[in-house]
Image (cartoon, rainbow, N blue to C red):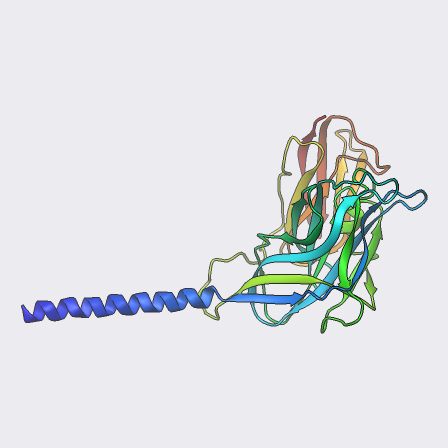
Length: 312
């Protein structure tokens, strides 16, 4: 009996030690990483512009240095609404979709997420959640956002919160006047706004330093073009692709006859997973006819094409 009791006690001690180690491990994994710059004393133009002779869509961005390895969970920008027309406003808010591109320091897109802002929105933080991107220590990320369809279909505008008096350490604010959603995806013409920094909030989870693979998503190891979603679609669809290394990319839409319908993306993209939105319009900004279309990617020596169906 004494030996059995000693064995039971040993097992209990071992169980207790296992529980304590598990709790400690959970605490380590669950450590929150936060970066905030929420001083707001100035507002800049954001979104569409329906004023005569002023058609444009205005996007904003902010670079943020990350000093430790994290799993990036969410990012927020501050807006003063409601989202309404600048010229002949309707006096009410409109539901809009804002696309956030998470970019590397060279402007290559690492992740794309969207947030739907309801028509009841007035003023506050807009948060993009579930970014799910592993970020190494000593990395600078650039977050750029634009209003989907802001140049034509959804010419609503709001104000973007910033600080005009003090700057965020080692951060840079970016702005761009674009002519389409595809143009806003392209890093070309995103320019530095020297005097302001955007108000933002970033949240992530600190990655434990370990030699064991945590199972988290890493940069992909092969080229891949994925099926668009949704499919069939109207009016928007998302085309996803992945790159194992930084590559020159051309992504375009073609008719079944092989005629170019829309050049969606062209330029240098960083390694990682990317998403590009197509709004069913051609190069002239006209809605295409219902039917089947091909989308084709060329990246380095990799080429691939898939079929999709646009419906009205």
